[in-house]
Length: 276
Image 1 (cartoon, rainbow, N blue to C red):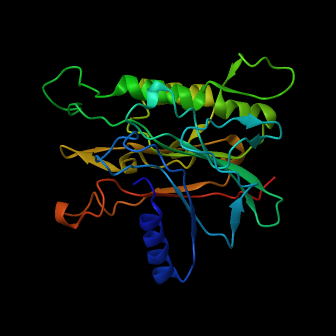
Image 2: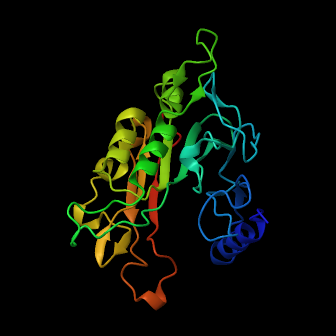
Image 3: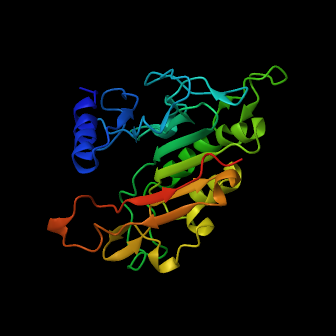
């Protein structure tokens, strides 16, 4: 079974009970047993959103095997849709889910890229016997970072040949240099390692920790052998950087293992998507 409606509906109900707000959700079902994680779990990334505040722009969901593309405008071919899901870089790994959103009056548009890169399974502690430390799965993540920022997805404008590969995120910015873009999720990597250095350089997005001037001692969302690490990140385009706020909420790394709800801390950001 690849449908996640029960899980997502349960989360929506929990939000309603706690806040009296009724959220909606959007996802794309994966191919059975092709996205890694617990066997049979069919893990995937998804969106929860408040439909009283925003909506998907021209909803047109892609399938699990449809590759999303940037159209003139910029607009998305599929909304939401996956990035090059059949590429071997995503073998046994989650595929990024791209969405375009707008405020209810249709005047303010922004894009999100929801990621969960390949795991660090087989890696060793930063402070341990292996020197240099083993960074498990790093080559998979390097390929995934390139596909997210330099995806083999065509910028579909008349003066481009179909074999002219363009960066997915940079293609949006090529169409509109003031486009509002948020890329976030579990990158399973450190910002100072090649996959994310490459992603930042090619996409031209900014690390929100740097933008929001988060203290370096607060930049963590995960514990590995009692070392604080940050695997969860958010990158934003220049148009969203000016008024951005960001915080890592240490609700899981500060409690006992038995009291953890997740092995990661959540991170919360606030943006003004209505600014010019």
